[in-house]
Image (cartoon, rainbow over all chains, first blue to last red; front, side, top):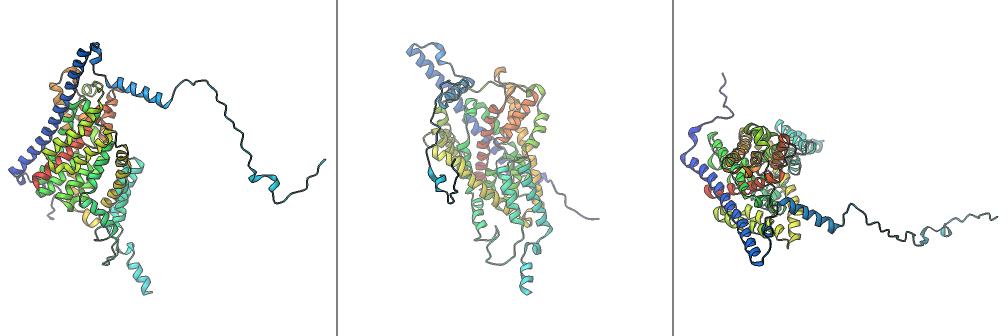
Length: 123
Length: 378
């Protein structure tokens, strides 16, 4: 009979109290740290809204001016601006611009400079 | 004739062992996965090629300075960037310059999903201890559960440099296999009705909020876990370069040229360090088994936490639990998996923007976990 060691020789008694505490402490610290970040960034929009409402009240603007703009609306505005700035449009302007297409004379391959000039019969 | 015999004794064929051939096969497999299925090709391809380089048997001749483990060789000098933990912060700088945190800022409660999905790190740490690994080795193995390659390299280079090859390769191979590992866990833990939950579209985020996020983020996480600063400091710096909009050139270099150069060197040297003699061991096999478990636990942690959040959230703010799985920090793979699973349940429900929030929070969470482990154990 061969005495082979299993690939996963699990031994739960190897875990010490200190290691268990560390695992729990570590996980709770990660959650706690990101929870603080969550609290901070939940407060910022609330502060922003309050500031906007105050501005609306003092300047006599309509209530709708203080509303938070949904992401979809911002995306649509951003796309429209981008298209406008890059001048990508569905409808052409229908203005034709005629540019000179003729090439300037260049003698680099002119027949008169050919090495062999055959006599041409003139009629 | 003697010269020819000498030459043949120094070829790779003369020194080849079955282990080398097996590792070369693994390297070819990585290259195939990267090219055929586009699984994390930016890393699997250089790692796979590095494995080929590292497993061609070299003639043992002192002073030849060829192998990655031989002091003074070019490969060894490049490998120092891995061993000394130089490359992970540079990669984090690039990731920061690439990342748009606005989905997270617009719906900050999703940050918690990125924290919850780090469960795999700490349970795998305990799991590794039960298998007989030492305390530091176990912590380095546990970080695989963060699904974050640079954090895994950074922590293992500090706590268990002898396991760095196995840990890094396990982390990257499982990150590449996220589309295979996560969906069954997500489907098992959610009901059809939960998978169809529609979330409110994210609100627009002001430039001021985007600039404040990296500043507040680095101060908060830096004071809680200063050991995470090499990673999180660079992540938030990269993000500030991007969001400040006054350092466009620096942000552009960080997210393109710098991260590309570092990724190539990192991938090749990590691959080359995975040599048959050090890699084909019982420990490596155990690390691979623990790594797979870590990914499953982390996915489950995120999904279950999202379900728990739904118990207290009002009806209009409910969270689709599928995005909890994106809390593991494999960006953007796990967010794409959550999006695809959402589309399977309801072809008109697009979750990608929502899933990106826990996904980027997961990057912060795993780096923070690495910092906590480093601060506590060293």
